Length: 143
Image (cartoon, one colour):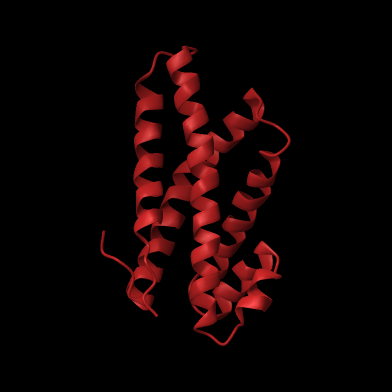
């Protein structure tokens, strides 16, 4: 399977840039708020893109598209560990990212944003590692 990870690579780059711009903006400024919102959206998009790629990769391990489409995200993450695409520790962290992501549907407030910002550095490391694993094992684009 030729799994193209270019979109995920771009999501990661955008998220890193948003974080850098957020850090440079004056505290409490409208610019910082704009970058914070970009970080939250980039976080969400990176997760959704990762889950789509994981579903495609898991088909290579004998799972049908139909089954994977009906499989909850946390179970997809567990399957990813079973297939060696993630470690158990990574899966546990992704559970936290997913739980936090589910909060975005209900709360875009300041507290949520601060909680999300605390998760972002680890998330970037984990999503970048996942992209590397998917690209190296499934022939994705170099980008």
